[in-house]
Length: 331
Image (cartoon, rainbow, N blue to C red):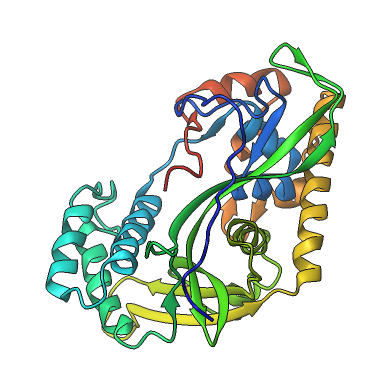
């Protein structure tokens, strides 16, 4: 199989919407753009989805983990888009310019510093010396790396007004950003980079039925018109440096997705969207209290939902929360 691929990225035809604040959930043309963050809220708690997707509010907390992960992603983009044989010294200099723009964490004890990001990239270069895959390219030689997409997924019934406009249905658009499409053993895979401090059986098990990576596999097939085998996970574990612990390690794992499962993902996702919009039709988003406290701590909206009903809007509008401005077009 050649790694030269014709790619046709379909983009929904509608006027460009402002980047900040984030566009409304349903635009004036009846288009509803969803991404993996939307799906996470759909499948966790309807009330959480209301606060995040309708009210556009999220907890105002430190972005150090997000900033650190974004810096690593940008460095990997540099690596996988650079011409073959680019000296490591040049890659490190380019990475340093990226990382210099990364804010330092607010907490002085947080190990996710710009210097640690650079050290991580330097360590990763040693792993990169013996990659078992190649980055797929377009016929023009452009690497298929950091592919933003907006692809129509289907239509669902919707009988309410949104922002003063009545709709009978909405066109659902699946959007996101694929880290890379790779070729390995004459097969194509999506590659997804994940930075984490915790590895283990549960970490990897999460990707067998991952809505995000199955959905990205579906999207990659629409983009290039060729079968995609599934996910090639690039897990980068980064931990606080100690005398006995492992501060850096890379684990790769394949997750094949059968075509039947990929097709089921589309039906499943449209059903989740329909269920969410049915809550909007009823003007009530139920609390799903199983998720108020989980393995990662409290839900970001825990302090809102525990207040009397008349006080919740004020709490959501307070400085404890901020507007959601991120979209998949951003990193």
